[in-house]
Image (cartoon, one colour):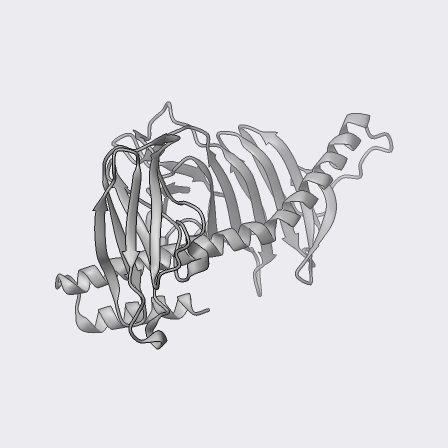
Amino acid sequence: MNAQTSPGLVISGEVRIGAELADSGTVVLHRVSTLFSGEVDSVSVRGDGRFEFVIPAPEDPDLGNDVYFASLRYEGILYFGGTVSEAADTVGTYLIRAYPTVGAGPAIHIPVRVRNTFLERSAPGPGWTVTDLFEIENRSAATVVASEFGPTWSHPLPPGATDFAVGQSDLSPDAASFSGGVVHVSAPVPPGERVYLFRYRMPSDAFTLPLEGGTGSMELLFLEPAGELTVNGLASVGPLDMEGATYRRFAGRDLAGTVVTVAPGRPLSPSASIPLVAVLLALALTVAGSILAMRMPRRASERMAARRREVLVAVARLDEQWHSGQIEADEYRGRRGALLAELER
């Protein structure tokens, strides 16, 4: 987008399919406000991949708080650009990047780059309340979509897990399910990193944590006081202080086909002679954990931005359902009000 001296906004952008400029397609402009949301314009992508929207200035300045964003559907998947609400958002080129699709299957592997599993003792007990944070990475140049061979991504959770829920992350609650001890994700996975957050409960103090398909970095974090614990499969590293709480940490790197076990009770005393390789590994994990903790605020802000975009899209789609008579008035008003309230937080 380029800043304009004339009133209103001019959205000047381009569409890329992967790294290449698109030569066709339709870009749709969406508007979201407290009074209205939906599609307000559409243009064809030119042969050089460019497109442009002109948004007139509002006649009433008090009504100038609308948010705009553009979308493109490519191979059945919707891709979105950033949000625009003021002239400062129109500096530079507005980019919508789409990708070719590939169906999920045995040959498609999306590894876990980072996994942080936070555990807090259930009150009154026994068992644990678990927050499981996965950062996955699609290292291909295509968006992975669900197919007849299965979901886009799946991973086992500890056997016996109950009360499964999807937390606020890059995944909407209706895009994941839990059955047979495995979480299944049906949402498309574009190239790059995605963060999924799941919450569940372990009814027993002792449990196993299966790691399948390769995990680049794994941390198990117990909120203190956690009592005496024996953890096998991960190394004990230094505690982590975060947001006024202290977590006991166990970590590992480059894990594949591993099962981590947790049981109450004091672990066996380590040998007085610790191999040098174990010392170096513990130091490396401590540094890696510190870097991950430092990244968490940045990732949180990125997730908030992604969630804001998801809410804007949800409002636009809800208005489309209302105008086409697909939902009742009471349901429409309730859901729309909740979404707009989330935008204002």
